[in-house]
Image: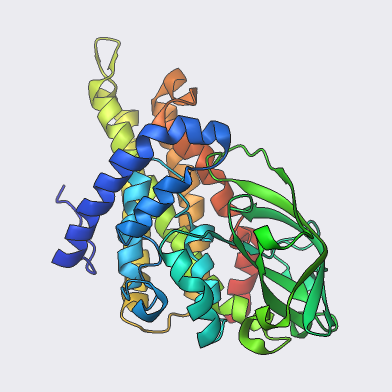
Length: 382
């Protein structure tokens, strides 16, 4: 079958792919097991990525980024998927954290914080999810009370990506009444704010190399100038604008990891001897992988169109980004499961790449909006 090349690929992106592949093979892959045990990557690796320009690539140059397109970030996501890694903080939640800041903060605020983020000197987490307010952001309970030249934050956040390592946290809190209009965003400099408390690093079934924390805000006092955008009550709309990008990123990683699972299964099937022949010689194996390859190609072509539109500066339909997220994450889990089955008992061992893909994939159907909730949102747009 003729190798597929995404229509948005260019010679410049081919060069980036070579750089990203070398980075993941040399700086990330050798440390995967250790990072899973310690629940975080080494900061030195994040700094190395910053030196190579692999962090905040689509952030404007005036804020320390590369001024590149979304397609550049897609290339890096694909290369991370190729080595079956989720420890390096380029998974969707962490990848889009700088864009929450970029699209919601004032020019002065971006100048203040973004260059350190882009260089890898400081990490950024986004604190939105709460124990009783996950996909339903409008229901969040964390409060921010104005007190002279400060805001005092109180509340509980959970499932916070890079919560332990990040020096900066973008926190959603309620400054007004109920619903969407009462939500604002704030920047908390975590190491300088005594009331910002990391309760624990959460144990997960997958993505264990990426620290995920529960956080308490206990009279956390921050300067009033850390109100993102300078105006209260705009937080919900600001978040929704960036969710489109995040959901497309989840779709991209879903397709890329499913493609990698097929490659691994095909290589295994052609070499695995069984009952006097190879596993590939069985019709069931051929049919299974043919079906998987067809479904992932369908997903790839849909996602490629959205990537091309976003990379060209076009405004993509939020409903289509939701469709892509739900469809691709569902197919990611299904396809990886089918491929793992072909490995037999070896596929159940956690040191197997296919097993790691399987474990890390499950959350894709949950974060960025659970797929069940997203189907409801699609129906509202019909």
